[in-house]
Image 1 (cartoon, rainbow, N blue to C red):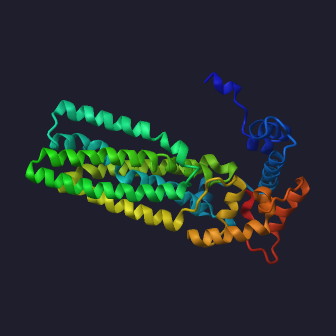
Image 2: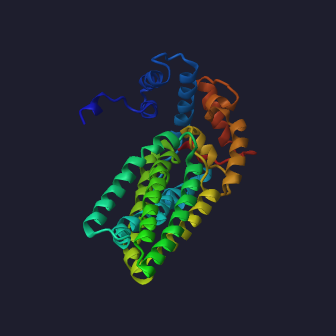
Image 3: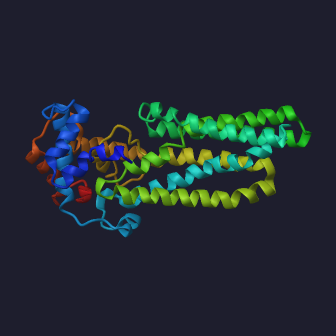
Length: 340
């Protein structure tokens, strides 16, 4: 808490609230060791000004606008809200809650005493905590999509093997097979912690315009609550009725999550907030159409893209003008709602 007093305000917040010089200086401190005339600083500064100038032309969006997409035009806020919430729902149904709840039973099936089963469950939770550090090194290097896709496939495989081995161990009362099943709990935790644990919390904060980012992230939390709540209610009945075979449900759901991510979740890693609006401008929700339209818009509206996509640097008026051009009714290919 004490250190918070010494942390600078977000440059985008300062620039959007009339403190442009302070925002520019903060950018310079992070990007160029305080040199406010550095080309990278000037480029990002101009991007932010371009977006802020247009943001000021439109009314603030409410939760109603975000849920329904009403009056959001090519911002497609309804789509973004759905993506933020559903990603968190899918995270819960990838099976982490069931693993945590059912782990002691699996370890007891493997022949461990009740005390050792509880101890292994605690160690398993610590593995999750430690392995989430891996995301620090991978989340930007490989991108959000690749991490989610790879993690979903790995988690699905773990659950198929976990369900099969647990069923055999229970039927044959085999401690060795039970131990093999228990090992897949740790493998699952390793994969989950490095992939699906972190990305669903990061993604919602990146896909919304700055002025409604807090509201957008709130829908991600709503999705998390729905996901955890439904799994917590369903898991006891699932395992009570199906036993270890219930892990197959999570295995199939992981494959479903992979398909959803592949089709509907565009890559947002290493893209500026200004570029995100262009990324979601496509009328089609499918990733391939989204990326194709984004490449077209990068060339049409260079003021919103770092370096104009071609190393171009714009001054304040040019940047503002390039975005305002997007609002012209005649022949415009995108909506006028890039403001937020």
